[in-house]
Image (cartoon, rainbow, N blue to C red; front, side, top):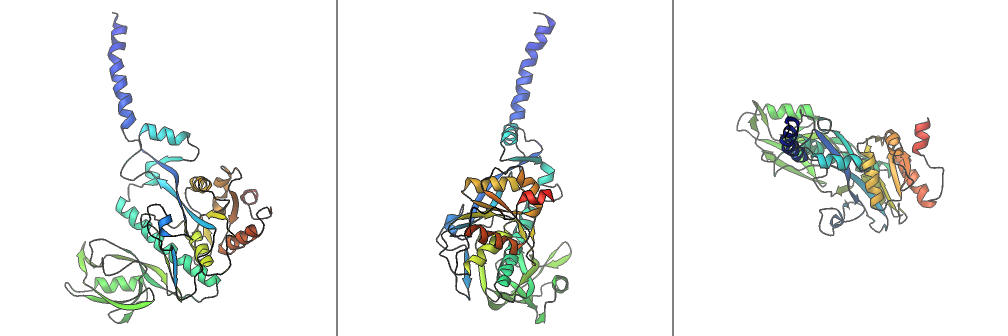
Length: 360
């Protein structure tokens, strides 16, 4: 056996071992794939992981209409977990699957943000987007909706846990009107060790007092909740979505769902309509991530029409094969108008399109 042949024979096990290792070692990438879509006009039992016959959107203080035979589907993206990196086979599969996307791991899961912080941020964004969506829909229906401070997130194992809940509107602290987040935080931090604070909150339209004893954390007094801008609603609307779904991108579909639930006429006309986009207090629809995966998920689940935020149009056109039909939306009013016009005549060709946006 020559020296070259011997070297080759000895190298084979090493190469095989390296190949085996690369099959299972996590690589510095993350993947996006189409996630579940949820009909916000349906019941919690219809949603992935849900159970029961309770409506996802419920109303107290006004008549609700739950007889729409159509669907308004919010869409999601399945993101590879932050506590693991994908293996080579997973990476290759995602790379060649046109419905998936591959990104650098640090782009999706920044090293400066922990998994707990990601979860908290997603929960805060979901709570805020729901309340803004309700406010936008109610304003469209002629209601006056004043803004206020609310609880957006409650940390587990803190003094606030079990006493405050997300969506609680914060009205007073120790009898003094709460004028903003800075004022509230300042008052809590000024509490002497062992003393309590009494918060007057409005929960589901009912006012109640909640007493909480702050604890020291990193040298300051805190109670363990995140305040954010909310609203005092003239009509109580609840949106029951799995708490594991975070982020603000369902805002547009929530607002359409609330509008449809509070109006007698069917918004969908029996059709399946999907879409995405953040919603601002003035009704502006904002850009989201994973648009291509969301369109794929909507097509998989039978959507005939898909509402695309204007700023996502360029990406959406890359996967536009005509099913579902893509309609560009700039704000809630334009989305509502397009849905009504399309339902009246699904064959019309003059709806706002992403092609128009890309050409301008």
